[in-house]
Length: 79
Image 1 (cartoon, rainbow, N blue to C red):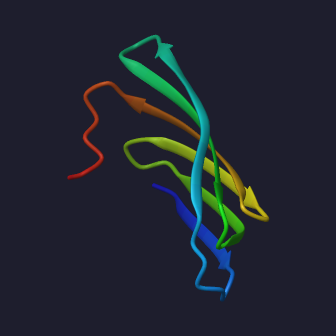
Image 2 (cartoon, one colour):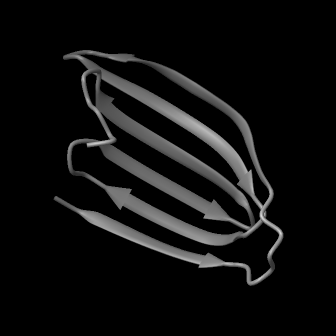
Image 3 (spheres, rainbow, N blue to C red):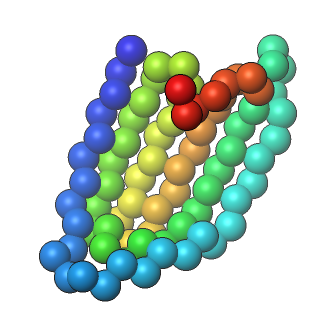
């Protein structure tokens, strides 16, 4: 298991968020993939790597972020 998360946020109270789009699809062996692109005004820098249950890598700079995830179809991330 690897979980790494580093973020630097703006001290301003303005917190605008917008989803700029996403793509998703199927992989072999009951796996799914998803690629999301978003904008968050408070985010200055974000780096995330996760490998428990799912594989996720997220990178963001100056508000713009990209998040790539591979997970099982039956994965419940709210547990």
